[in-house]
Length: 147
Length: 455
Image (tube, rainbow over all chains, first blue to last red; front, side, top):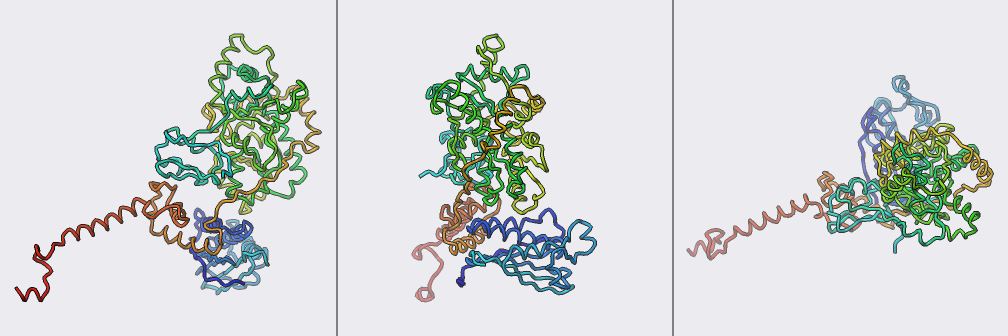
């Protein structure tokens, strides 16, 4: 792995239940990655993951911050919130499992595809969560074609 | 070296350097430099938005003239379906086609008829599963093709690998004319009567470097006056000896307005989008995978579809009423024969797009990834210092674009009039301060203690 001090970080604040603004952070992240000139496939994976993380903040996390850190060898996405937290992280990673309360499911969300979709489109995913405190998720996409 | 051909051009003398076009351009492909609008070649998709918005009529489409007909022994006019929507109801479809013969063409072949063949080929492609791709995106609009090449390279695989009605019309018409007249294909000219600059460009530079059978393009606007005169002649009984037979059914003619293509296709879940900014927002959804339940997507850059093209004459909403009426037209015997004839050709892949449409290489901030990241960082810092008014006085469409041009080394921070004013203010303050300073020999201030003592 090439260690390089060159990196750029951008943070976007995401508001709880703001469905009009939802998706804007992911769109801007995609635009940034295109300007920098990453491989289109890398951009697609990062955009999808960013969008899922952003929607998680809008719907489940009570709002929070979505950040992107770009480096020559990898793209890191960080989602942080002070929301309800996830009790069982392993379960949350399973397709179809959702901790979303009934109120959220009634809106048609909480199908349990969000985090598995993030996992599917990224190379490394790290999570920390505490019930009642919040959730911290870091998803990494390597930019070289070695997986 | 010019890598891209564009029909959309600037008439320098007419350009006042205003900012209307740079703000309207969907790919941010225009900058005002030295008082004139300059088009960035790799980003321009020839959509014609700037032609529409320019108050000084400084943006034009370079097209072919009727003079070019002299280069061929036999000339065929290929009217776009939108062409039919430009004229009053008192003129029949046959009158409209006859008028083109009076302009000097030897024959007319309706692009609307070829469109019906394209519909058959598209149905076949969708029935065969479309290679598992969803949604399949129509190839009909050249500006949308350019947009996908520039901004959505990953969606190139969604484009239906089928030829455009225009090119198929030229291929079929020239092949038929060659058989009938005994002339070589090269001696036969096929001219598209186009509603938009995008099609002119795709005649010169077809996407995917496919073989193009069209020899030139004339805009609806440029032939409009002559066609009106010809229509009056026809009404006065001075029409051509042999009237062309109008064959296309309402399904093909309907392609001229938005929703027409999917109406003709009529299978699965379909969606029609028009207006380039709407197309962009829908393609963004496709990219996110939010449209996987749509089978077919018709995307047209102009509002209302081709009748809204920047080189049409009639108000697009009035033209739509006309086209709606015409699209009620049923099938006739000639059209039935045509469908029977091309059915087997469709099976043989006659309508298939041979070349692959490649993405356009849009320049990143730097060719070196690490340097590009550093520049991305600088970009945000520069942007923070700009006023964020997006006034465009600097010649860029918005503050972000200026920040980008600055880190690319193409613009200066003082191109921003607010930054420049601030600099002038600082300078003025300095000048004022200096002006107040008086030499010790004349003034009373700033004496050294030692000199005071001497006094």
